[in-house]
Length: 183
Image (tube, rainbow, N blue to C red; front, side):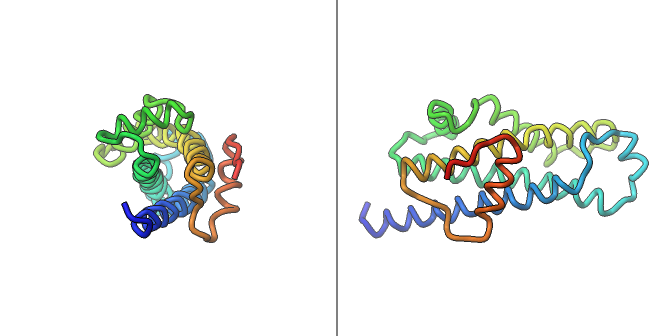
């Protein structure tokens, strides 16, 4: 790989890191719009509340976008670090080993919850509430992983997010969810 190609790869990762910060900013904003936990009765009583269901749709979308973006960035950073990445499971195992993710199982739990939203068209309000309460419970898992991943990129790869408007909001969101931003 030439020096120019390597710099382009580092710039790409930097952009992905900013995208992670942006995802967290918007997910946190959507998450704050609701009072947790949700109940089936509440959703049933407000079944025609467009703002409520738009907020729920935004949480689904933004949770998925955060996990997808974080996964793409982890794969890219792993390649820059010279780590094996033939399968995403190997990528996850590497990040579990160095403490970026809590566990492969926790990541897969987030993925399963995300996939349920994409493929399940539930009509029972109690089950819809359970799904969103699960996502709400899993958000800190992704926030913590994102925080630790950005710190890994800064310390191990000397790659920081592209300068943007989301740095302080990212720090605030991850701090508010029990993570410690060390960057």
